[in-house]
Length: 619
Image (cartoon, rainbow, N blue to C red; front, side, top):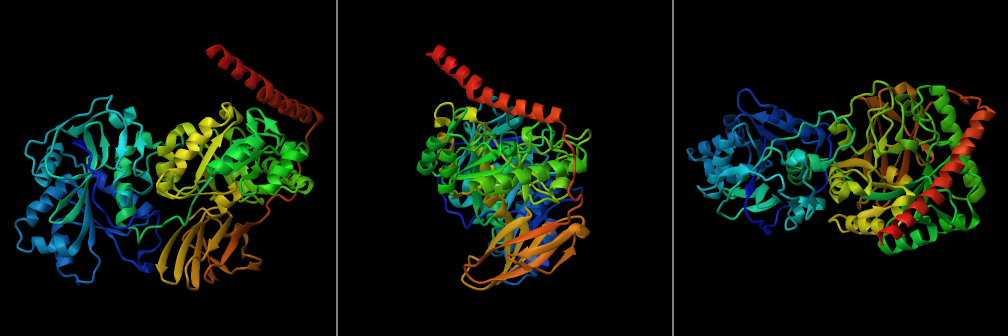
């Protein structure tokens, strides 16, 4: 059950610092010791467990205490100790403030020991209503159900420091978000509404004894929940997910992991590098990229390596900031990387990379060693195999393998910078424009890169829909850095400062660009998840080998960089299958050629003609 509080949206109030955040290493290594105190009662609810999972995911040290234990701990603390960030249910917070009002030191406790409080809906809706009445001073406030046609959820645009990239974003309400949702009919006082819906408020900021209280009328999402589709959509989870994530990013900005940059790239699947492909005109698209500030990666079918035309090759060579290409399968036959045979998979991966190398030699166009799976199909064996090639990562819409019994994918898997459940070889997830800006904004909040995918037919209006969507992304309250797909992968990581001269970094792709953006020499501790240290061939930083060790399921190594210095680090794995020989008969080659040419006929003639006829009839 979730609730919302009714009332007009207030656009006021300055908060403290806000930053991106994600996961954490050991608490004892942290220079900043902000931690969460989870206030509990006997027989803790599942909601408390869900809060703990979220804090752990985002790297926030936490402890559970009863209200009495929190009084005793803070009463014995030093004045210089960090103030506590309290998180509890509405039931427990109501008990806490009733206890504080009967204690002689209640005011001092709040003033000296509490930084802020996050309150979520408890089991008892009456306690939530009573709490809000108490905090607002409005005894007439009453909970009521939201109408199913309540409209979108709106994140305040008056709290940029707190809301960050989500500030001003509208989240389309879905049935999952509206069913059984309540609003508070009315209230007095002057709270700051953070997430509102129709005439109600789902998340707001109040004050109790001059201490900020962030009150969510929803329960908390369980990030261990399996995603049947393998895709997370914030439109289905906005109330249980967004309020606490916003609070964690703000309250623990100095403790959580963060993304150094927010990197972005548009990916168009399939085009041959000819002046036009379907509705894609490469000269027109370049002009739009320069005017509207974005970059495009062509997921290039390696079978087409001989077929790029000189004019388009020159266009790509002269504009590497706008255009790049990646590896879109080998022959682009259906499910070629959904195959369970490791040797066959290794052969196809090697063949694809050899063709891309030949294309690079022939044209001069550098290719990003990133695999975009044809039709989005991959097997667990494919992921294990690609890890032992020169590819640095995979990119895909879906995250569930094509195996007969695929592994479960949870919310926490897809909230990560990349999905790492397949032998720790990363899948960076991408989305279509019709997933809407709110999903991309939430990805940014989580620290994920922005990867957009389209096919040529999305450009059938001379890219008007595309540039409108890109403009809306660029208008988010976060600076997007548009790069090639390979650079997006190499710069996607989590980092946190352990001390003024030590930074910890979590690596995802097999290559990572590490940069020292400070004004002093800095040591970087880099960690990369892996289950089998015996498969590691070596670790390099630039041209030199780096010593590494294995600890707690991670490859760990260190480098030192001078101010302004950057270096690419890489983890290489042993070649397991040699040349991966696999014969292809004449029949297979003929079928592949026919498939490729028929697909081009469909894209260049059938689809375009059908679209123009539809436009003509509709006029």
